[in-house]
Image 1 (tube, helix red, strand yellow):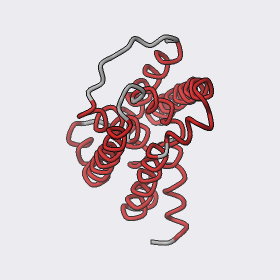
Image 2 (cartoon, rainbow, N blue to C red):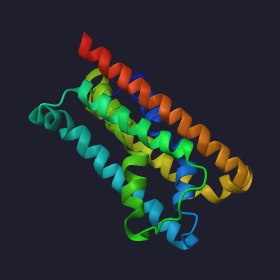
Image 3 (cartoon, helix red, strand yellow):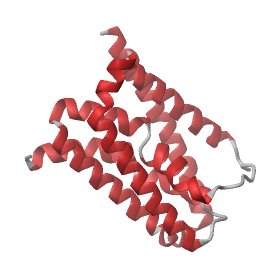
Amino acid sequence: MSMSSFVLCFVPLFVAVDAIGILPMFLNLTEDVDKKLVRRIVLQSVATALIVAIAFVAIGELLLRLLGITVADFMIAGGALLFGISFFDLLTFNKPHRHVDADSLGAVPIGVPLIVGPAVLTTSILVVRQQGILPTLFALIVNILFAGLVLWFSDGFIRVMGKTGAKITSKLANLLLAAIGVMMVRKGIMLFIK
């Protein structure tokens, strides 16, 4: 595995994981959770994200083929889902208070689909085709661990940004997520046309 192939895998996966972009959503989901429990949630989310990402890289393309799903199908479905989630969050100013199940919060929705969601899974399939499985796996693991570090030190980020800054960042992240969703749908449609 060469350094250049690692970098070519790392950069698109870094954008797809978007560790800084998921921080406001993480803060929103864990705002009423005891701080000691937040650490356990971070560990659970990283473990879940790693297991899902590694399993998908290993068998994802085979699974999609068995189901008759093309990469274009996956991109369109993932993009539509991302757009829907971000669109709802962008238009909702006062989110309804929801009961958070701290036992599963790290696995779903933080581990999957926030850290490892449709964008990461789709990107990983495309990167494996271009660069191979080993550099892709290594780049995925490094990106997921980086996301875990960002979430682990979320208190420091919130102190720097403040609550207003976190809300603004959350809205900007959702706008970016909506744009990524549209881009994935567009690229999926372009794959269908070719």
